[in-house]
Image 1 (cartoon, rainbow, N blue to C red):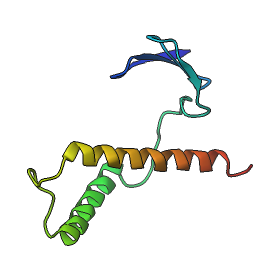
Image 2 (cartoon, rainbow, N blue to C red):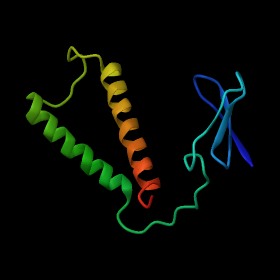
Image 3 (cartoon, rainbow, N blue to C red):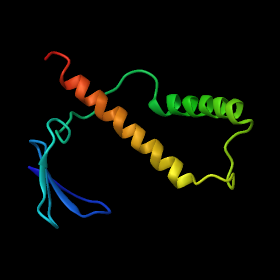
Amino acid sequence: MSKNMRNLVGTYTFAQDGEFVCTDCHYNKTLPGVASEQPVPEGKGEPIIDMVVADLQERAKVGAVKYGEKLKAFNGRDALLDAYQEALDLCMYLRQAIDEKNNVCK
């Protein structure tokens, strides 16, 4: 079974074995475990949204102390560049966590 996904770059077909193929240029790559199916979530505990809201409020406080005010529009910074750099950092941390999880017993 495969799934098709369209993004800004092109259309990709993902297979259960972790392989994806660009249907525009036919580039293919295997990413072990990254594209695998997961079970339907049946969680217990506090709703994640509540934790995220608390985290956002805490980050706003930290930012206000660090920069002297809460984040506001038209502050002289490029918000897209800031967000992109943060997203790149996030990708690095996520890939590190995936690699550590997959290689913990090796």
